[in-house]
Amino acid sequence: MGPSAITVPAPVRRRLAPAVLAVVVAAAVLGACRMPQDPQRTLEKARGAVLRVGVADAPPWVRRTGPAPGAEPAGVEPELVRGFAETIGARVEWHWGGPAELLAALERFELDLVIGGLTTTSPWKSHVGLTRGYHTERLEVGAPPGTKRPDSIVGLSVAVRAGTALANRLIESRAEALPADDPWSAGELVAAPAWELEARGYQPTGHVLHREHRALAVPPGENALLVALERYLRGREAEIDDLLRAEADRRDDEGGAPARSRR
Image 1 (spheres, rainbow, N blue to C red):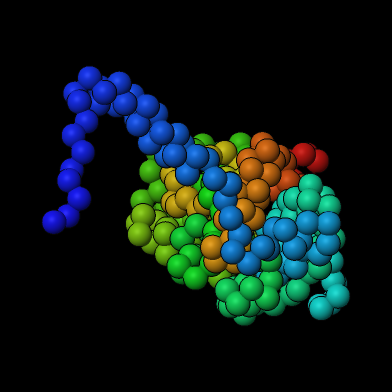
Image 2 (image 1 turned 180 degrees about the horizontal axis):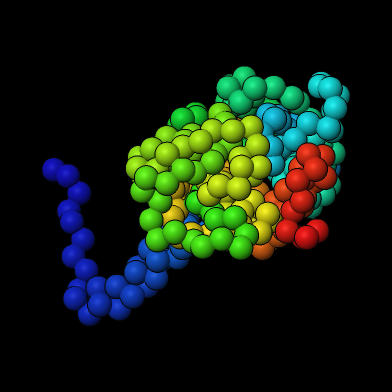
């Protein structure tokens, strides 16, 4: 015969119940409070050492300052990465390449971070880790300074920088897209990021074509690095528009078109 079951008197069961519940709750809290882990110890290895960063040219987010591979990158995201590296006492090692090439290397843990104007909807999101969107870029139609803002853009001509997807967004909105290398020179309505419209003194018309949430990429499963990076980015969130306006001013200095800040 098997061992006899032990019967616990009801009063004892009632006294034990709160203690058992407390143990269960404590175990659940301890499990929930575990620090995020890096299976490959990416953050730990970079701390006080080297942060290997893949950089893809994508102004204003990442901009070349000279011939690769030794060029120091400029733009919004290198500024953020330098600041983050400083918080962990790391020296940044830059690696130039195309987005697909760099993200594949990141997936193989050959890099610690990839930047280049990525968004939270990147097709690589199932292969690497992406931060939460650190900045929401609003793409909309603006009217030139001193002109009346239209109530609708249906049937209107709207200039847009050649080679961007905004032309298709305009067509979907039943406007006429006018792709140009310099969309600001025609004196037309312009479709562009809201920060650039503002920097050039254009009036937002309220016709938002698209929103994109910018993100940085880390190796898959490296949650300690991801959480530390997201915490840092949240602390810099209020500065992103200023960094973007500085990039717009720099572009105008090189191209000769005056920005609002110098009018």
